[in-house]
Amino acid sequence: MNTQINRQNQSDLASLNQVLCDTGFDDWQIQLTMPQGMAAFDNGALCLSPDDLPLVAKQILAVKSRSPLFIQTADHFGYMDRNEPRLRSGTPGKDQFFTGCQAGMQVVGITSNGAIRGCLSQSNHFNERNIRDDTLETIWQRKGAFSYNRQFHPSQLTGACATCPFKNICRAGCKSLSHATNRTVTENHYCLRQKDQAQACTVTPLKRSISFDVA
Image: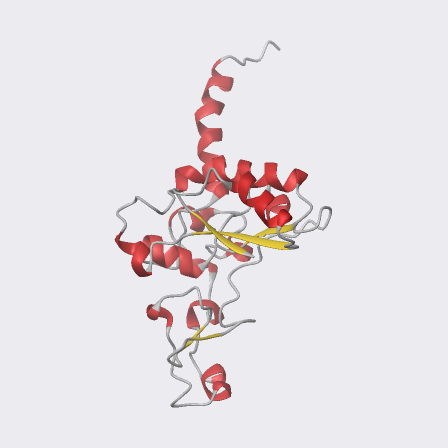
């Protein structure tokens, strides 16, 4: 089962979990509703903001702690904060973590009209070629295909992602999410680690102001 989290259902995770358990589901993937397609015109009424992520993460972890379901967050949600393994791992103790967008690397998507993309979560912006015109093998092996991932280098990153210690692994998170929310694939504002760091910065100066060396 795949559920998109947004402003209309973000407080319903516990009740959704109970419905899935009662109806015999075993697996549950949770991801964000992104501002693309019809959701791109909601003017903030539907899609969550980066500031909403810590509370949603807390709600997901609370549900996971008591649910018998195999629950994972999709690549739209993360990244690299202190709870990353707990959010990413469907099975307790596995300690999985986000290893970067795999669109055009390990996965590929074919739309209903034959367009080839690295992932079906991506918009038309990421279309490569059409399977009606070329074989999948030709498109996959074409020089320069899926360059946003295959030719990635950390020096391309911007914003907070450029100085993040996990930049070689995370690579600015989900490319579909970063493009939908920021029109770029070089930085991602929907990052739990960034929210953690911002919160730490508001606390640290106070701690330093009352500490001193008595030696």
